[in-house]
Length: 585
Image: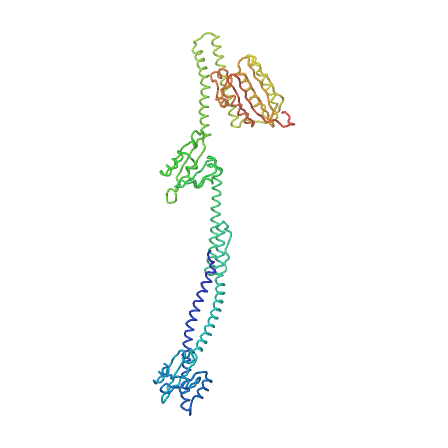
C-alpha cells in the first residue's frame, strides 16, 4: 500500500530534524567535554599553584593542613619529595602510600614541568584527573579531581540536549504537519476531482486556498476542467448527432481500420446481418461481421487501390437480397489510409421493381401488339378491296370491334390498377352489405353461367363489412367471373362466408380446371396467366386478380388461393366487420 504524501513529507522533515539535531548535539557535547576538561585542568593548576605558595609559607609538617585543605576543596592533594616519596596526602597517611615517583604526572613535575594525567587511581580505583606542580627546592604537589565531574556534567548536557532535541522534533513535526497539510490537502482534492473527471463529472472544481504554486496549479486545473467540459460537451453533441443520423439512416454504414477491425457500425448494418445493435459489432473482424468473399474483396481493393468502389453483392449464397456497396477509403490529415467506410443499401426492392417494370412493358407491348396486328391485317384487307363479300367484311369489322373493346378493357384495367397503386383512387370506408354485393354480382353473371350450364350457389349469410361499395363490387365481379370462366360446362360455382372475431372470410369456389401448386403464388401478379392462350381467348387481360389484390390490401384485408388441378379452386378474402349499430349508407 502506498504511503500518503503527507506522511512521507512529515517523516522526511522529522528524519532531517533528528539527524541535524543529533549531529549538532554530538559535536556540542564533544566540544563541551573538551572545554570542561580544560577548565578542570586550569582549576587544578590554579589550586596547585596556590598550594605551592601556601607550602612556602608553612612551618611544620603539612599533613594536617593538607587534609583540612582537601576536605574544603574536595580535592585530593598529595605532596612528594624529589625522590617521589609521599610527604603528605589529604586522603591517606604518608606511610600508607608507596612511592609515587613513577606516576606520569609526578615524573613530569619532578623533571621541572607541570604534569597532567587522567587515569584510574591505583590506590582508590577511581578515575581521576591529576595535575602536578614542581616545588622550589625539589619535590612536587599534586591536585586530583574525580573524572566523574566531567562525566556528570557531560551526562546532564546530553540529557538536556536530548530533551531539547525531542522538543525541537515535536515542534518541527507539528509545524511540518501543518505546512504539509497546506500542500497535500489541495493535492488530495485535486486527485478526487481528477477521479471524478474520469467518470465524466466535469462540473467539479478544486478549492483554491493559496496563491503559491499549489494554488496556481489548482486554478490551472479548474481552467483545464472547464475546457475539458466544453470539449466533452461539444464532442458528445457531435457524437449524439452523428449517432442520430446513423441510426436514422436506412442504409448500413460500416467502417473498418487498417487491421480490418470494425470501428463504426450503425443500426441498419446490424439489422442487415441479424444483430440487435451496431455497437455490438465494434472491435470484431470484418470477416466475422459480414461473411461474404465479394464484400471482403471490395474492402481490400479499396484499401490497396485508395479509390472508391461501387458494386452489388448477394450477402449469402442463394439469397434473393441484392446489396449495393459503396466503399470509400478513410484518409488521415497527412493523406495516409487509416481505414475504409462502406455504405450498404438493400436494393432488392428496387431491382425487383425494375424487373417488374421490364416485364410490365413487355407484357403491355405484347398484349397490345396482338390485337393491333389483327386489326391492322383486317383493315388492310378491307382497304385493299381484296374482298367484295359484305358478310366477310362485316365479320372482319366485328373482329376489329372486339379487339378494340379488348384493348379498351386492358387500358381501363391498367388505369384502375395505376389509380389504386398510386393512392389516387379515393376509398371511402363505410358499412357495406357484402352479401348483397355478391348477390347482385351473381344475378349479373347468371346468363353467362347459364350458357355453360354452370350452377352458381349463394351460401352467404347477411353480413355488414367496412369497405368501399364500388371497389368491393369490382372485386366480386372479377372473382365470380373468373370462377365461371375457368369452370367446365356443367360445373359448379359457389360463394360462402365464415365469420371470425372482427372480420369475415368470403370464399369463392369452383369445380374448374384448377391451378398447378407451383403457380398458385403468382396468380395475383400483373399479366400472369396459368394458360396464356386460353385466358386470352376468354377475353382476360391478366390484370383482374392483381386489381383484386390491391383493392383488398387497401381495405387492410388478406386474399389467398387454394387449388388442385382438375378439382377446382377456392379464393378466400377477409374484410373487417362493421361495428354493431352502423347503418348502411
